Length: 144
Image 1: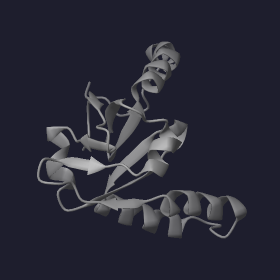
Image 2: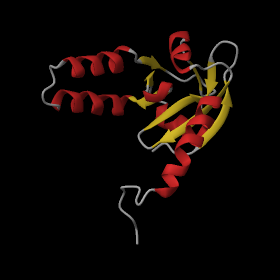
Image 3: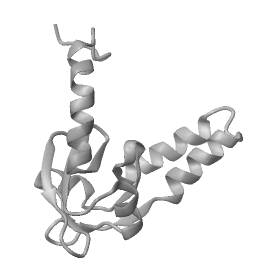
């Protein structure tokens, strides 16, 4: 599980040191890809396999929308192997898609992590925080 928010910096070569807490989970390889709201998703290989099975099980799966979703999702995936220091290199095309320059935020979102431009993340949180605080429920089971 990926949790937490981590402000980080890209170096001049587009490399990012992943949060220490995430490194063991992606040590066997991972992918990064285009995500919604112009961020980058980071997924373990096991999660990619789950997504592939889920997409194959969707009915109907041969619609224009399904083809577009599969192309945008799987077509933008880049297999990444973190180096010994936990750094990954984000290709220029994905940096451009997400508007990543230098300051980024890596956000754990359960089965994936997201890489956001820091200013875009701050704007997103500012826009969503009030609505989240006013929600009747998170839609998740509670322990009480």
